[in-house]
Image (tube, rainbow, N blue to C red; front, side, top):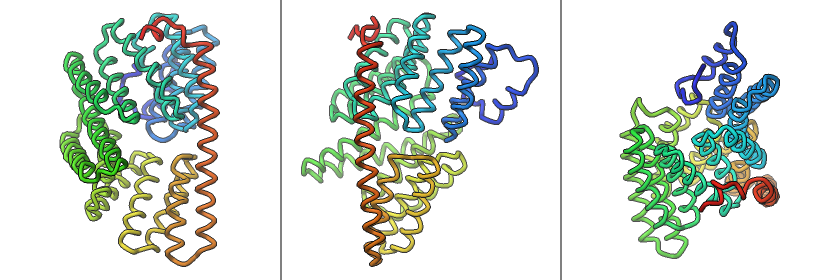
Length: 384
């Protein structure tokens, strides 16, 4: 049986495994679920959901409740990647319930992190925090130091978004400590990346409060952390994490106005993102490269890059990226004197932003209803 934790199993190898003879239903469901996870990581969430559908039907037919819970967990990840946060929450809650019946505490915890991430994306921060603190309860109950560290790392990111920076720093320190106990050093790079992101959030907050000098200091701390993280990212860390580090480094160079370094870094990110088939980072890299071109007074180059980024975002149904790119397209067209086209993209940006806000509010209401009806009274969630 193929383990869900086998991170080296890629999409092609898993599809070949599915073609093998005489697979038991349990093995087939496990491989399909892992295929869904890998498809999500590779920007192929639609293919992942096809695999999940077969896995759930097979698990239901053969009465495999634990395997079905695993497939639902994979579905939650795929829906999350597609920005379908309501389905991510619904599948995550169902996966959690299935794992709970089988007393699979570690799996319960990992399912909860997906629920928390989806709640965070739609602005239901209180539910996200409650889920993560419930996950800490689960990790302690199971004496699973790795799950505990992973949850603390995720909670730190949430607390950073809420500008509770000191609490976030404590969670990161605890995550490092517990990771040492878990002997899972490959995850240290993710904590380092989160530390970099926390420094950037501090910088953004300082600038927002009218303290640009402190903001610049935090940006430089984040830059130093990102540079160290990139150096430390070797063959033992997966390429998706390398891509994340590279993208963050490029963004920090950009906000520090080092446009030559920012361009070179985002060009590297773009090459790697295309190799890994990661449309979100492809679109984001093109967006920043276009912004750099605008700064350098090259609106025609910027327009080309923004158009390419928008096409990528449309193909991959990247809802959050599209209004950002429409807005930048409008700026480039305005500089070029193409006012009517600029107005079109400004309007598109506003409409997209309004639609996303309304959708997130509706998903938040539905998520809260599901939470209060089916989830909030679970002992391991309520013991906070």
